Image (cartoon, rainbow, N blue to C red; front, side, top):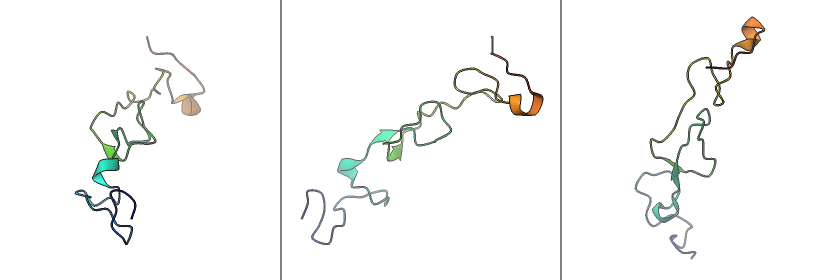
Amino acid sequence: PEIYYDCSGMCLNDIDGDNVCDELEVMGCTDSLACNYDSIATDDDGSCNLPETYYDCNGICNIHELSGVVAKRL
């Protein structure tokens, strides 16, 4: 079998039951709406930084679709 797996392809160590072997887990931000989203992270480490309400990650107002105005946060 592959390293970290048994002969049936099951993880030998998977404490959180997410089908990713503990030795292969990647910690990071798993919230796709966060500014620091990490697409390869398999376990959320609490590091997610969400943008301020009504703004995107670059500080640009994201309610322009409603008002027709784009504003940069000061």
